[in-house]
Image (cartoon, rainbow, N blue to C red):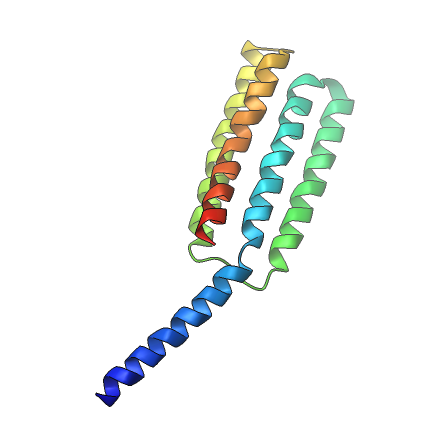
Length: 138
């Protein structure tokens, strides 16, 4: 009977540690919401602001946001379980949506404000869906 009590105590300790870690891993949802919101600015900027000035401003702003989010992520003490798989899935889905948005927006729908708006929403979806899932998991 002592072995069962020890096993139960160990499982309770593990559950307590996991609950504390999960509570501190909510930062990833905020990270994803920021990334999703950034798409609502980035995609229309890239699709509608042509020329060297638009390319420079878009690239520099994107670099600042990506570096900022990356620095934020590396300073977090807790990484959620399955983080790498989730993050790679989000970034992969975003990359596909972003490339399609650029190709269609620059070739088929040049200077189309409605297309740029829809493309921005579509590009923000992978991060927004993952953020919502993260919020529900915490």
